[in-house]
Length: 79
View 1 (cartoon, one colour):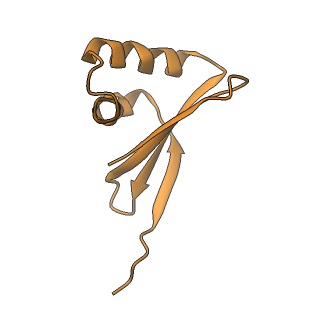
View 2 (view 1 turned 180 degrees about the vertical axis):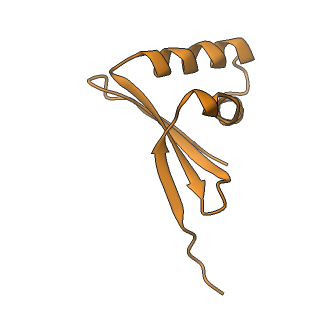
């Protein structure tokens, strides 16, 4: 069988908040859900921070990355 899977990587938007929060909770399970929601809101509002999602060809979430310009920090998760 084919060992490779096609992925699409795109910038996350408001409509992605639920799945984004679920992925963040898997990466940081000790953080409160409200803290995840606040962090996502900050990323969505900040012009120097972006959230990206990797999705399978069936639009299933496969992982995410949060990137901050000038801070040298990238966080990511894989489901």
